Image (tube, rainbow, N blue to C red; front, top):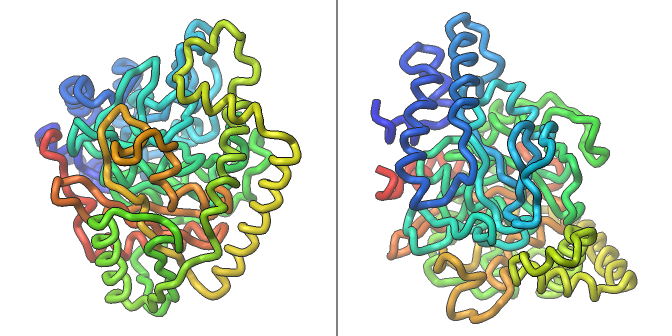
Length: 470
């Protein structure tokens, strides 16, 4: 097999090949390291690759498979960690010149620990904007990360290194974080699958400075891999006091059971968003596929309106202030200017303003729980626009707009903490991916995954490969 063949195998396919002895974890890792060496300089997806550690882990996995004792269905499958998540032995620099790399890095975050325990081979860390503050990926530390479908465009953010990695066949699994869309935005722009699980489903430590809008989750080539990965990531960790009670759920068990008879709400604009025509058309066609699969689809808007933007900004700006609260004054000059501006807006938020936003958030969450008494799922576009020029915060025709101007479909569900999945559902005439977002009731990650799998069983968008990654 070529490194391209290996690069685009799913985790489930790799595990099957390991089981049959058709390929070994060592062979896979060696081929992926070759691909990373060839393609990463153009993409800037990884900011750290540890070849020696990856090969050592691959050799241990290979021995387990030969003995017939893999640790999990993901044993030997390569994965990456977003460089905002603590990883033992590797610096976590958060895209920032202000983080000193010369310190002890001897703790794994829960998600990293769970992948190690599952036997995954950790290849390295993926790029992020500084402290994950925006929906694209460039930073003072690592520069601009680019989209494999068109390297002039952004792969989204803040988990943009992860999306570029998976889309380009530089590793099938990635852990991302999502505080306002940071898994789903890059999943949509790069044509991969990205799940923001229910808040607390994947334990976090330390808690994000952006607070309870921030989730961790899988970024993969298809829904089955996301389900396999979620089973491991969701295992409990006492360090997260927001963690949900442990349920030994096999998220792959009912993936193929279909969605016939489900009541699905389809909101093309959430009642207020301006959506690119190509995005709107492809999402509408995807919704028809869900109807053809037996779902009862009704075009209806959920109880969300444009006031949600100010509510989210209050939480997000306050989080940026919190993230930089203890930064020495001399270091502020080294920050991304946009992050510094966001920090200053957060500093200006009063306690009364924050509490008003918190109360409004509670009302929104309750309204969405009521909405899902009537509808099994809600589907929307993942984003209002396709990928745009790399290095910009917003499309050129939006001028100096904040990143939330083109992400109206993502951040509301960080406020409500519901599970939300982005799957590829088409391409623009210029060959840029388009995403469909599937939102479920709180704690029903299984329903979101099952609907995503049903859609992918009837489409092949998730199997497309960027030309530059051939």
